Amino acid sequence: MSTQLDHVSVVKKSNIYFDGKCVSHTVLFADGSKKTVGVIFPSALTFNTGAPETMEIVAGRCRVRLAGQDAWHHYEGGQQFDVPGDSRFDIETLDTLDYVCHFG
Amino acid sequence: MSTQLDHVSVVKKSNIYFDGKCVSHTVLFADGSKKTVGVIFPSALTFNTGAPETMEIVAGRCRVRLAGQDAWHHYEGGQQFDVPGDSRFDIETLDTLDYVCHFG
Image (cartoon, rainbow over all chains, first blue to last red; front, top):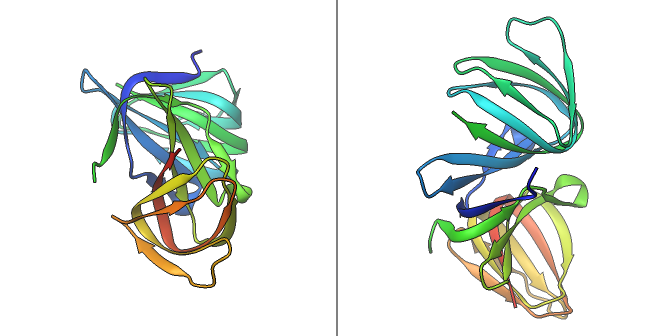
C-alpha cells in the first residue's frame, strides 16, 4: 500500500464529524474523483454511505459491523473493507485510525 | 486566498499532537518543499518552531502570543501570522481552526 496520494489537490478546510471524533481532508484527483484522508479517534460511531466506499486503514485498529450483519470484523493498519452504497456501518475504533476513504 | 493546494502529494498517515487537539496531514510539493494542512480544536497550546512558519488561518478564531511578547493578537479565517524559526508561540483556539502551515 502506498504511503501517499500523488498528483492531487487538497482542500484546505477540513470535514469534522461527531464532535471531532472524525477529522478528514478532501483530496481531489485530475479525473474529477475524490477521496478523503482522515483520522478517527477512539469511539463507537455509525457512518452512513452515499456512494459505495472502500475504507483503507493506514494505521490503528478497529472493529466494524456492516448494516444487516451480526458479526463484527477486526481491521488494522494495512487492511481495508468495503461498504455498499446507501448503507451504513458501525465502527468501534480501538486505537486511533488513520484512513483513506475511496468512493465509488 | 485559494481554497485548495494543487499539484501535491498527501501523506496518508496523520500527525497528531497534544492528545488529538491538533491533527494535521503533510502535503509535499514537486520542488521538495512541504506544508501541513490541519485542525486545532479549542484549547490553549504552545507550539515550538524549527524552521520559520507562516500560519494561514483558513477558518476559525484564535489568539496568539509570540515568544518574548506580552501582547496577544487575534486571528480568524482569511488571516495569517508569521513565527520566527527556533522559537515558540502560545495559541488559544476559540473556535476550531482550519489552518495551513507554510515552512521556511
